[in-house]
Amino acid sequence: MIEPAASPRAMIEHIAKAIVDAKGDVFVDEYEDGDETVIELEVAEADLGKIIGRSGRVARALRNVLSAAGSKVDKRYALEIIE
Image 1 (spheres, rainbow, N blue to C red):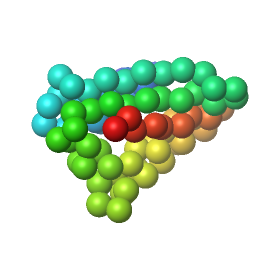
Image 2: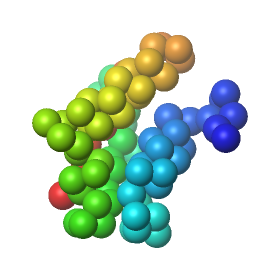
Image 3: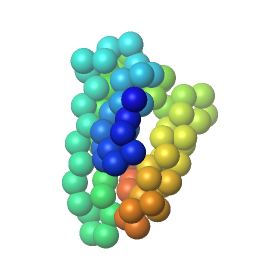
């Protein structure tokens, strides 16, 4: 289980590994872009559909989780899914 003070990067990595089949191919990177922190998520090509979801629902949910985590620490986060 994720501890309450876990970083949003670790949280996205944990959720992504729970969704995909190829857990070893999940890579998460983080960098600052102005006033927001961008989290890049890269998964195996076969698992890309699982991360994006039907009509982008899973990706939207991941972005909502990041937004909620950011509001708690008063920061802005953006999620980029690398194809």
